[in-house]
Amino acid sequence: MQKELLLFQKLAEKLIKAEKDEPIATPIAPQELFTILPLALEDQPVEDTFFEEALEKLVLSTPRTATRLFFNQLFGGRNPKATLGDLLAVLLNNSMYTYKVAGPQVGIEKEILRKSCDLIGYGKDADGTFAPGGSMSNFMAILMARDAHNETIKNEGVLKKMTAYTSIESHYSTSKNAAFIGIGREQVRYVATNEFGQMSATDLAAKISEDIAAGLQPFFVNATAGTTVLGAFDVLEPISKICKKYNLWLHLDGAYCGSVIFSNKYKHLVKGIELTDSFSYNAHKMLGTPLTCSIILTKHKKYLHDSFSNDATYLYQTDGDDYNLGKTSIQCGRRNDALKFWTLWKSVGTSGLEKIVDQQFHLAEVARDYIKSNPDYTLYSFDDSISICYNYKGIPAQDLCTLLYENATAMVGFGIFRETEFVRLVTINSGNKDEDILSFFKICETFVAENEALFTLKA
Ligand SMILES: *Cc1c(COP(=O)(O)O)cnc(C)c1O
Image 1 (cartoon, helix red, strand yellow):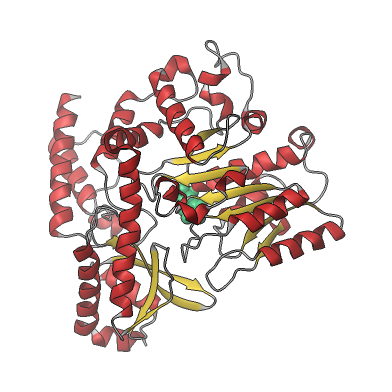
Image 2 (cartoon, rainbow, N blue to C red; image 1 turned 180 degrees about the vertical axis):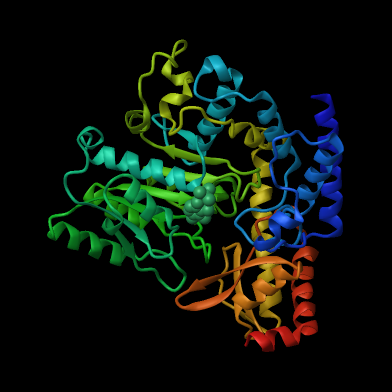
């Protein structure tokens, strides 16, 4: 392994230097991928030098998600302590299902879950697990809700039409998950939102009443902390009241911005979180750990266990259920996603996590202030969001984003809200400074000025 560790170090240093010098890797068109890069697999082994060269080429031509010009996704940047944790997890290669195989790593996971549950005031019957991403966390939530609504379904199947509710601005996983759990995509009701993209409690109540009148069985409401496009936070208290009235499971999808629970300044955005039945957040989004690190918590340990445990004598041979985490997970073999979060949390403390979250809102403010003070821009976002949506000089957002990417200038995406398309700048990389945000705007402006022909051509 010594040789590979040295090679790793060499490649890592080259990458980090490249990230500084050229924050955006020159993109390769998919049609040219196999001619430009030595990706083909052959019968015979390759020489060491060729192997190293191939690896270096691959590493240096891969999109650079850790740089100051990557704003394309709801993740970005690189936290060194979290990365160290993930590298160690790979080296240790445990599977998180049993205490016998994962040992103290089980304690790492349990500590994160316990602390998270305490932070949101879930009480003593709470528990949780790590899922392979936010979509799967949402899946686990809707499945627990289904079984909590009717415990016979997991054996007999869905016999009656059950309906789920989520806002039109929520993540698409609710629809997929409705298909997975057997109620069907058509049984998802899309609740209207207000001008800020927040779920309308009035429309929610109306849709539920309608379904009950039609003889259907409402069972689940998905609220969102940080909608995918605008970064809006649904207001929980009125939604919770409706859920209590009709006895519905309330899940809070905090994949994007649920990590505000760590910030004294911003946790008011999820006021009433203790009223929810389950809550998920992605540490790989706001907290900046490597992908994936998604946590699903529930106030009702019983339902987590009831929906996900299966006996298996070949697997569970020692220790109690509490330490055999496979009893509450969706997978069997499961990678250690907890260690990278623990190394981060341990090194910076809860107050350090708070600083990470606050920095993102600060950068968002810097971006909004810049846009507001410049008449060439139109701003569509509001305060308390780290998604900054805008248009520049009326250029179609899709054209601008695509040209910036194709010319290796910046990585930023576009979004749509109520039929308006705009650039969506996501200030999720807490390693960025004020000047990185300002230089992003300058870089884009210069690009537009120097490439006017491209834009008139597209128009
Ligand atoms: C990103 C996101 C998800 C999906 O999370 P993955 O880890 O990508 O599966 C779900 N909901 C919201 C609101 C998100 O932003």
